[in-house]
Length: 625
Ligand SMILES: Nc1nc2c(ncn2[C@@H]2O[C@H](COP(=O)(O)OP(=O)(O)OP(=O)(O)O)[C@@H](O)[C@H]2O)c(=O)[nH]1
Image (cartoon, rainbow, N blue to C red):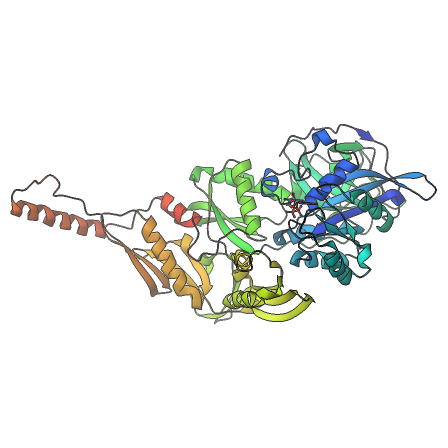
């Protein structure tokens, strides 16, 4: 994260009156160009000078910039003056909240939406509507936002603005001519879009005289400034040096700094109704500044808190272990710090025979997992290993006892009555020529089709229920490669279902290696066993004795490989010579091997486990999205 000055550079005048404020976000399918458009807006409104401009200005995390994706939402204030019919310029303050586009981060999108009155629905003019365009649009509609449909990338030769304007108009209502056409890259049409935002998006409303209430929609830990809390003021105002209270916990703090990002932090004399800005209270723990909480004045508190957001639920679990065991406390501290920034991150300590001390961490999805891991490694200098990810299972034993399983090692060994697995409702948009391909893939992944609609004559929307375990891993990759990149996917959790699942254990010389146990569908257990044993056979160094590598369901072995014993060449120094001496040496070696076999378990260097876990897991399901 780049250094941010501890105190902001400029002081802005007091709160802007609500009629002159517009709060909006940009929603789009991934890669349709949100960040690029945001960059152009920053430039056109003059808050970032051309010479200071860098691509994806708002994406502060290195990972975001490298991968070209937005993870954390950012709120930024931009001035924009519109000229009325009378020729008079009226300056407005636009607050733009950038939102992430990846399905893992839908949760962050919905929080951002709740802080806005309107949304720019951005669609790539060469791609048309995609699965997340729909998902985000529905979220915006649920939040009753004013939608401004916009086609982006009209500079591309492959752009088909007329065709897609019709598709969008059909979807959001209105006429195709109403769909604005812009290029975030060249800047064409962006001024008209800023004007349209002022014209169409309603100004925020709230009671300026009421006790203050502000919604926390994000909370970020900054090494230099402590916790920076992003708020949207609903009623009243927040002012420097006043004492504030968090309504859910009752905790009180002094407001040390209050301001807006424009896009660098800029101190203001306060925040009034409808304004979006940041607060600094000196707290060091984001949990004291909880997203969804309401901030009020300690001495003149509001009586009713604003409706908060529900906590995000982790969907995918994985064990994270430091490669160097002595880094365990550092890993714990690093997770604590990341948690400050990432409400969706959950973790608790766990130990593994193979990997030592570590944490079982819950994530929103695989991309979230990768990003957290990468941040831990990069920002905190940790070398980590993660175990194969799994979802949560609800297991009911025959005696009625219920167990929640987030780790294969917790899978009960007793008589199991029922196992329930989480399912998702998936929406796949594909050109019609790939419908058969998509159906093939979803069938392999135990999907059940629940609907199919033609959006236009060559684009189809398919809806499925799919086990989450089948979708969170390489489903997206498969979908993309089998449809030559044309299909798009969005999904949301949709309850659970019973499933015939079993735990497959991996045994080395009869001893279970916990890090490799997996919960898989019974039909796929054999494949998992064969792949995993074959892989371990390659990785485990030869020992003085033979090592069986087995995959087993309970006591039943379903696959086996053998790591052959090292055969020390005891005859190396016996050139020619006496045959009986050679035989004697070989006999002696045989005795030695027998003894070794009897000694304890196999010595496997940790590196081998690490290699086995970090290369593509045997299920082949650990690919990136
Ligand atoms: N030709 C052209 N390319 C564009 C335009 N806008 C964006 N791009 C390109 O499209 C790609 C994706 O743009 P981003 O702005 O990173 O997309 P995004 O929607 O912010 O992506 P996420 O933050 O990951 O959701 C980049 O390679 C951009 O350079 C445009 O108007 N014209």
